[in-house]
Image (cartoon, rainbow, N blue to C red; front, side, top):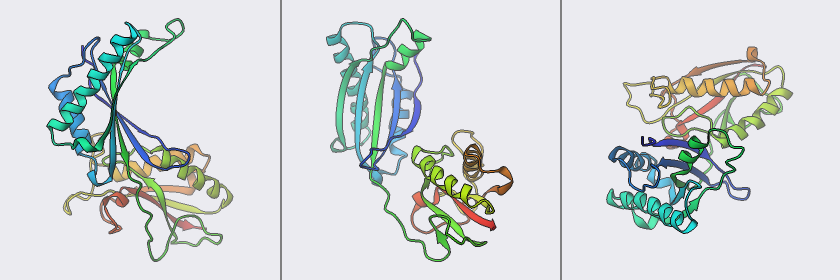
Length: 272
């Protein structure tokens, strides 16, 4: 049976360059490089639902499992990558933005020690589509917004974190967001008396529809889920639960700086 397309929202960042990458994997049957129509339409939809103005380049890498000869597997993995490239071009995705189409051949595994060998092999029969994004510009927000906890925090201080942003329709924390929250957790542990509300926000919904649907839960609680994700992460980092509350504000508090910046969570200091 065909493995259905899965999205792996991995956010990888170079040490010297904070360029964001999203990796989307498509899985193939053994010894095949063709896909079902739904798989093809899903991978095209994945690219087209992303903000195209932020895509700097697309890379396509094909892989095979560890069976068969090297030369054959290189050719098969290249054909798998070509299948995805051809479908992109067919659906209007410009070829000039696709900078790499490469068959990587087989993925070697130690079949003596690996658990669930058939499943591991099935996951190696894949193509990874890598979207490389241009970094978001930093924005200046006037008024009582801060990007950290000040030396003398006061009630009403609103903390906007540049890197605490979410993918469209998602409440899953990215690696970049987690690093930002790690920094914030250290400050919160120093300022032991500070209590705060975690406020979740969304973008891109009509005025009559305050809240958005979380694509992971299929429920219209996206801003709530984003705030709760931050709450749970800070709790994991030893911030006492009694110091925190969380609430979703939907689309009611836009920054007016672009939709990317409204897929956010802020902290509002409520007690010092």
